[in-house]
Image 1 (cartoon, helix red, strand yellow):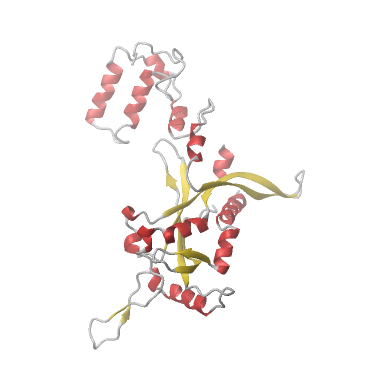
Image 2: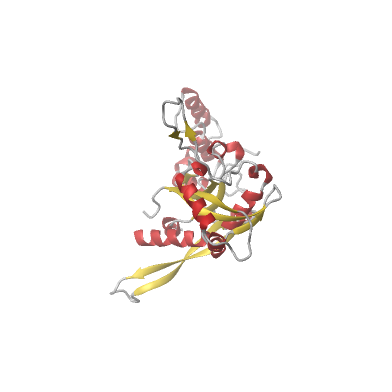
Length: 55
Length: 254
């Protein structure tokens, strides 16, 4: 059961952090900003704050 | 409303659903209304209910209260109520992705080894489009910090300046990520300014109703380029919902 919970959890984060996100993480994502400047944004995860869901 | 017909199946649609009768509805409402603590006045309400000529003790004696409370708590109706499913459908950029997990079977079972198991559906948003939308939204763009900086406080010239810790965009972690990015090789023929987007994920079980143990595990996303003084203001709506996590226990009880 604990194993299934962990699998379930990992599988769902696998869906959330999809290929499109990995691509943006590696090579950035180009966004035309409101100040008329085009920038390349690189998402980085700094904080993950959650209860211990594997249990 | 016709109060004289107090039998469960006198009309095709029971107006007291999930309560079978008017008497049981009144009692149930008395129980849940105004929270779990009962007062003198709510006791008088109870006396009014059971003292009314229409009240039938035989109706409420046979009522399955546990079942009714679980229905109040949002469990699906047994008559195939599809309304819940339908209202999820037209919800902007939310998508459903099937979850597949590996379940191990031990050596002495019929088919030992790993088996793929269809573990329901994850209701979520595409992370990149949420970030893109957040950055380009005019109302939040003006408040985003793209360049990290260090903040010092010096109260007296006799003392050394003290580093102030407060925002993600003035933290060492953000500064390091920023410098690593600026020092990394550029994308081919791309001279655009490169900026770190600081993602902050949060998740916690949320009790949905008083009536049951139904819970939801939302995943939230906030962006550290925005000041904590804005992020923590509910009126700024800085936290984005990313997903509602499924749990194994929910799967097995369903």
